[in-house]
Length: 240
Image (tube, rainbow, N blue to C red; front, side):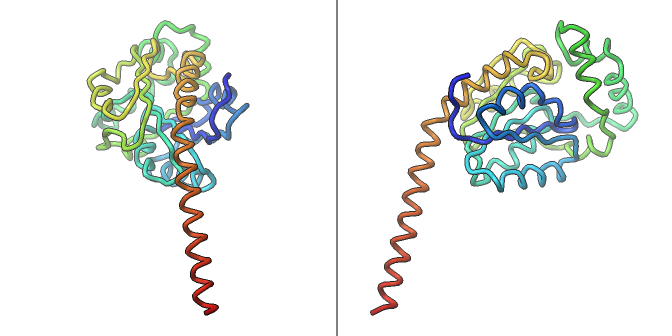
């Protein structure tokens, strides 16, 4: 791994537990501060992310599935340098509690999960993923309904999972005016299904943030110097 800029990484899953970021924590923990959050309703998850950002100076916030909506909701935080969005990108469908119950069944059967959520991965990968998650209740899912993604304000990376049934290239195109794009041959959870490819795409993107971080450092330094000068001028006036 090449030397990354001095950043903090906050990985945000939506309705699923943060343990699904295990491959990213192991990979990036060697050179960056890494936080993982997830498995809560929208409001609680957003509060959790904001709390983590308070201890960050230059954070890159990485989302997956419905966590993408949380990521965009905190994009304007002063410590956020950039955001990364990982499919699915289409708006969560309005389904009833009965249909959601069927979806929970998919998450308990490896054959169904492999068919709907993964590509041609080995069953051991699918089984490991299902073992790590708990099927969310309907109220948690419903807290994300009605939310949609917009063009990022700050420079962003969009990781499109080409084998995902719940994403479309049209949705990715809508984000492109201020977002770079990486295409991965994987299902809905590329970061778990093909972690090496995912980590490389993310690592390459992070290496490109060095110029942005240097500009932030210069702006912060100039602001601090200006504040110090104002303070010294105020003291001079008080002494005269």
